[in-house]
Image (cartoon, rainbow over all chains, first blue to last red):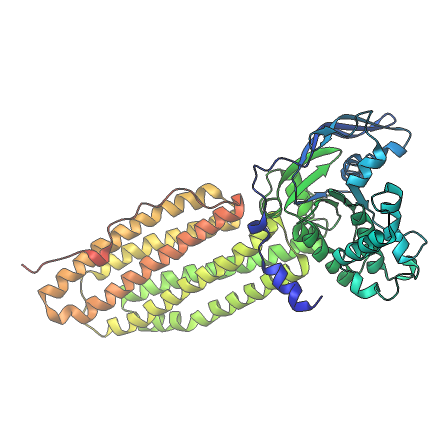
Length: 274
Length: 237
């Protein structure tokens, strides 16, 4: 991606592309409480995730933002002492319903982690893995196509097309992270969760991921946890501020960063406490 | 460390320096305005000349504040109230710089006026000048003390200046009609009055900026517009 393209892209005001406020939420958190053993990590969080928008979750360490993110595809299930109360829906369907298969849920709500974690397999197999185990693609031709389109959507195909059979772990950090995004896209999810996806990357690799996030939101709904407020400001349309397990304030990103309503939000974004 | 302090204390120092610099520039602008009006009133050429020369310092301060604000934006990436403070500082110095220019222009006209025969409406200038000075003083105090009420109250007072300007405009037209030899002096006085009225407008801009800086929103009420002096018609008898 050329510098010029990046400039032109950032010129377009994010506000002009916003979905109307009337859009029904893609996901909805209703009085979500999370306990780790005796300790309550989230207090009655009500948060709507709007479709085709990037929602950024910000707040100091331990504020519950990652905990909330992990509730959205039941990643907390794997922690024994973790208990989730309240209701979270995806398209009005309760994702904690006992009849719902968490594996299927995670195909619909994909995740990208802080540290790029490609499988110790080839670039090709990293992408093909999901479609194979979910059985969404059968023939070699189908899988070839998924691999190509996923890598293309993740902005990586051009860089790796001649070495698809080389190990994914041989790529640079930024490329590995885009490979992980491509892997998440390969199973055709509806929502992509990102937990500090750029914190291990340099500024250029970060810019590429941010550019990618902006492109992806045309087709996906994205929720991102980030410690960089500038990043939240750059990539998201809506920002939610968490503090001590509480959702303090949620609003249009522009409003949160220029004129927050709550004094705790103001204190945090201006670097007065954390 | 109080709850209002940044974790990075040098950020607070930067913001304080910025504020102090604007206060210094405001003080200078206030005194320029006062001296300019006094020079007209006392027909004091030396003072008028001093006002003209001091304008350069105001321009310098404007550049200094601009450079500091730019640096703060680039290095601190301020957000929320801090972002508004920096944006407000840029707007305020540009209004102050304009007020300074008007004061310098009054100084220039004061020199010309002092060599022309004196005409009575010069006293009217003193009245408008007094109002403008107190308006400038109040908006600057509102800025330094983050005083929203004072800013809003000052903002409403601009109306009085507009009214006084309109009445002075009529008075000067009358003088010009009475005796064409008054035209040169009257015209200079008219421009001076207009300059003062414009200074008042810039002072209300500052009041609006202070409101935005504190509240994050625009001032709501519409300022009632007085009669526009340019459309006043005075017919010869």
